[in-house]
Image (cartoon, rainbow, N blue to C red; front, side):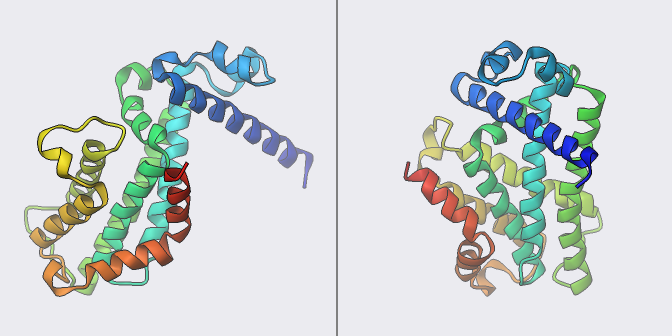
Length: 247
């Protein structure tokens, strides 16, 4: 390995340590509790060194957000490789989104905050461009499965919709369901009876049936597909979640 590669590895490891420390602070004190001074106090690097990696607190927050989106991309990519029909794959992407949120609750909620102008506008251009690139990669995974469904004849695109609109509808439905039923939020009225995994599958199937994406809910063993997600496709993530919940 060249000296340049070693230096890059060192810099990458340092950046990860800075972000891990920032995440610990946010988890304990919230976003408002994060400062560069607090990060510097917990790691063996000066504030100047931290600023070599992140231009400001907001840039650090966007860096955390981007790392989260990159991890989510890897899950989406894995979901799209599921050995099944296109509807099983698109549902697997939604399930991957839920697992990501449950395994990384702080990062998941952080993405919402990182979208606000008060953070985005103060972040470096490099981080903002990276964020747009990563979101584009996420969308590519969804569009790939939609294209597969159209090519195979599993569903036909309605005349008033584009593939991007279908992708956005599915993405926003999953995001909204997860946010509203996330265990970190207080629940009231009708939401007290809702269970995240069940409702995510229900809502996805309602939407997919509405798109006439086959096989329809009543024509397929979706419980069997869900079991495959848990025992085969996302076995590692499910084990991690169980360990986390048992702590």
